[in-house]
Image 1 (cartoon, rainbow over the protein chains, first blue to last red):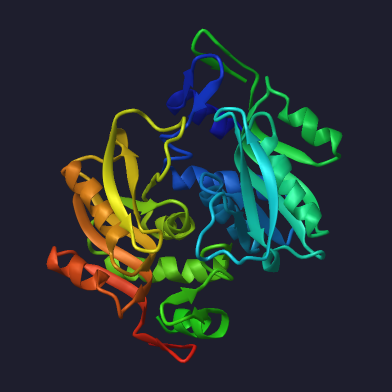
Image 2 (image 1 turned 90 degrees about the horizontal axis):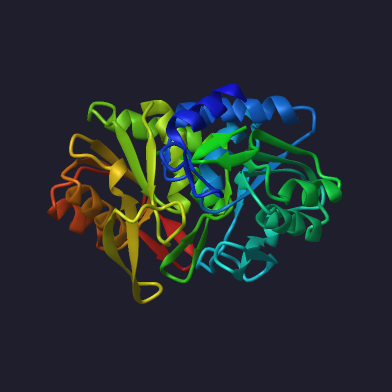
Length: 188
Length: 188
């Protein structure tokens, strides 16, 4: 998606050889017009997959999923990372390993909001080593629903997330794939 | 907002005499069509307040803020509750007391995303004792920006959040005000 790549080159920032910082328009401050274009693009790529629900994970996936859902005209469910009063006791739970924080954390969705007849599109801001996406897929699998696709805004193509997801047979679409970070430059 | 009140009566749930559960359409699973109506309603109520940015707090405020921002055509910034790699070191920070968790937590926004020329609309899903909203207002005050309004989806009218916000002179609009919960019924 050219518009997104241009935006990343213009307003994104490489930190070291591993971090792509997009907090000025994607995951802290949010450029809503860009998100509309992202939503439309996901719709183009998954419109024939009978999606009836979008699943994401708090917090950075939520705005992307909400705007994308406008085009699909389907509800969004977001997995929670923390126990909250609003969460039922009866949840699907999956353990996700965070390489950056070097620890496992639980993600949870109330059983009421994932059904076996669901055709789910998983949306997230980043794909790196695939652990969050695999955790979300696992929640859907527990519910016996169908993961019809995984839509990612920025993929770190130099890490192994894609491989792990394709191995499991999932349809994966990333709108921008960063091939490498070289001398402070983001290279697609 | 009648449509919202009807939805709360139909799909919301009272738990004890204090909790209004709206996780089937607002803060776990999200009804995007309802959110569009909520966004339009916020726009009607704050359209003359020169809003140039919407500020909310992760996680439940994000979807509401993002859809509302479509009508204002402005960016969204969400305050973070947890330290993350994406967050700059240079932040405005405010302490928020959670009555439900009985502890303080920090909320943070990178200084880059709140400016003194900003006219901010604060959006959140719930208003109860006003601590999160006051914390968000405090972040804006630190940046010398202007809080032009506070938009709340569901207010617990039997708690003191409204009083605390009005005392400080803020314009407050709540789309549904729950007057009390009585014998398992939500009463507006």
